[in-house]
Length: 256
Picture 1 (cartoon, rainbow, N blue to C red):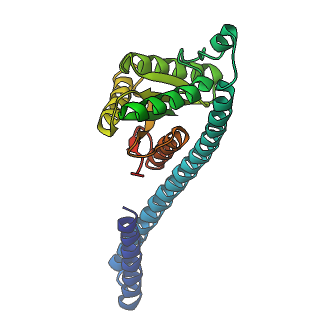
Picture 2: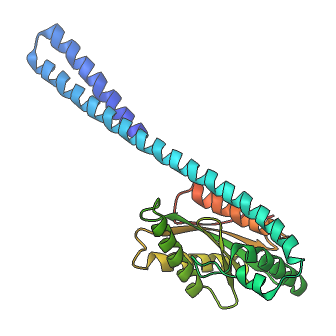
């Protein structure tokens, strides 16, 4: 599209120049009018091209900002995983376990519980020689994104969709600011992609689907990683790739 507009602007400008030269040489007013009209076309095409380039640059800057934020959250998640693995090895009282169990915004398990679940599920999958998958969802568009109440409502909606869409044997946890992680038991890559698409499609079909969307990254054991931390990292990289291509997408991690 940009190349076409450049050609239009260039062609119109050359036409205006040629018509102007002819009008001067032949002293014919018609050629002067033609030169003026061609000049107007050239100006309009150049203005349209400038506006499109400005919008593209603004969109690129917004995407880069989102990816930078996503990388920070994924790094923080990796640190939390390491901390919670160490914490899980220490004895806890029932009260401490209950306090760490649920996130109030989404109604899902808390981020600190996620680390323990991933470790347990990968260990169980290794013993039983069965696959498991990790899917990380992130809200990528929502109304009134800067309003704290609106963000809480968006998280509640997405949490409810995830809880209703996944199987009872699956686990889902709140991760970071706008992310939710799901651990899918006995699920290979194809099943994980299908589950992620179901969650995305269910949200799209909801009353807020035109304004609230999510992207997802999928990684599977043992296809994409052999350890719990690496499995989460691969899912995060797949989510980052989805965000690079825009909103409302599902991407799969590359094979290990």
